[in-house]
Length: 164
Ligand SMILES: [Zn+2]
Image (cartoon, rainbow, N blue to C red; front, side):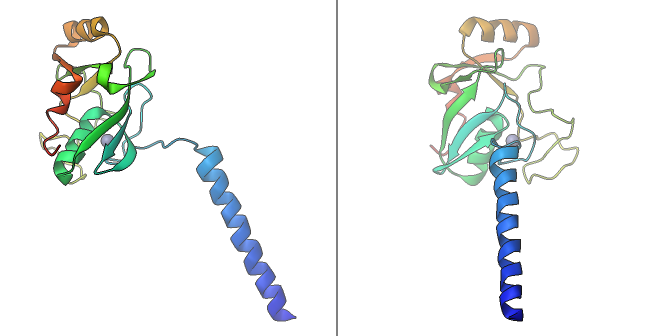
């Protein structure tokens, strides 16, 4: 009698926590909100979907994914990037990338983050040099005119991933 009540209570607790978890995971946050590699917030016009060593995840920016792949000595595939101007998801193969320059893409909270994912005042930041993706070459050129930096093709950007 008592055991049945305890068992029932346990089942109830397990069920309700499963429902709570499911709601939180799939309803409250249907898309990831933080970069898989550095835990910085994802921004809709900067985030990328990357596959590093065959594992797919969302990253805060293309630069962070390249840093991660190089640190892990693994090959990188960029699956989706976002047009910085419109926030639309685009295929990286046809995109143009502005690298360097004075604009900072991953400076979400002005907190430098080193290669060990700690914070300190070192010059290295895993999201630097900042990389912005554009669907149109003319938008990339205009952005580079305003902020400096150089315009790269997808192939040029990917040549920075060292373990392909
Ligand atoms: Zn990141």
